[in-house]
Amino acid sequence: MARSKRQERRRERARRQLAGKGWTAVLVGLLLLLVVPIFLRGPMLAGLGAALRPAGWAALAIGAVLLALHHVTDRAAKANRASEADSASASRARTEPVLDTGTASPPSPRQGASSHAATTWSAAVFAEIEWRRFEAVCEALYAQAGFATRSQSHGADGGVDIWLQSQHSDQPRIVQCKHWQNRPVGVKELREFLGVMTSHGLKSGTYVTSSRFSSDAIAFAKANRIHIQDGEALLKLIGQRTPAQQAALLEVAYEGEYWRPTCASCGTKMVERPSAKNDGSFWGCANYPRCRGKTIPKARA
Image (cartoon, rainbow, N blue to C red; front, side, top):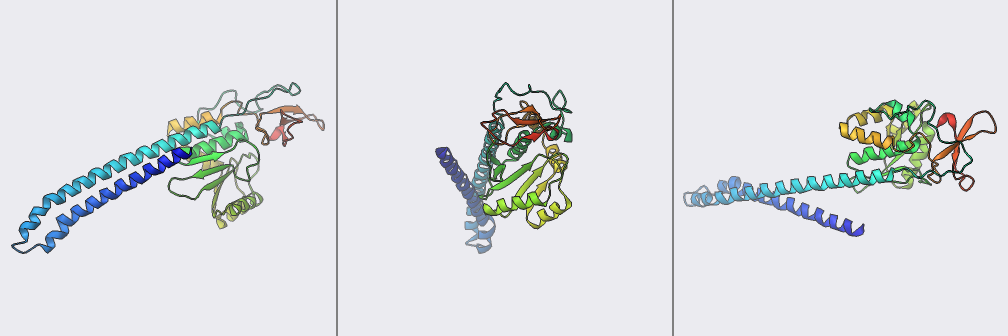
């Protein structure tokens, strides 16, 4: 990995040098064609100016070729980075294997979920998928935009679900994803996220939810440079992608048992268990009691 990064830095320096030489050649050509003749107006010097014109045109041609080569190599490098980011995002989005404990109810599609994956994007997709699939969709969406992404499927994340790195900036960006359906994200959640931003020395961040933000949360976000995206804004952003990219995002959303929640502590798919307090049920970790991750009420799954 380190060797690959060093090679990429060397290639980047070579591309910058190529662009620098191209612009230098263009500048020399313009000087010979436009500036030098101004100072060579005398009868004896006019011939010298005429003799320099072919050299000026040659310099312009060389500069144009070098700049064209830089443009081609730069576009190829960007396409390669985007492809690597897509591959890394798809790899991280894979679900963990399901463990059979023999004590829980067999998996069954969540109530209200369709038996077939949707073919187009809508708010119903967010309602059908679990939180880990939602985060994977967000990460894949940023990867399509050209960001290098980094995340973890489970465990303590320090308040950061996705790390973003742009090729145009050395400053990383952080994203927090909240897969909520029936309640808005409030000031409390954004204040906690602001604390995470501060702890990492960042002046801005992005908060994404499948739900919506309260009016107080929107005002708080504007005052603290937190870029917020609710479910409607996220769908609009997805709608701006190409049909092929939208289809790829749907594949990420409906990968595996998309309707079964993932245990945030160990990454295992959760199982439905009967509740001892009422006639309902809840989602619990399949590794219980080895893993004592938080349970999820069935109605919220």
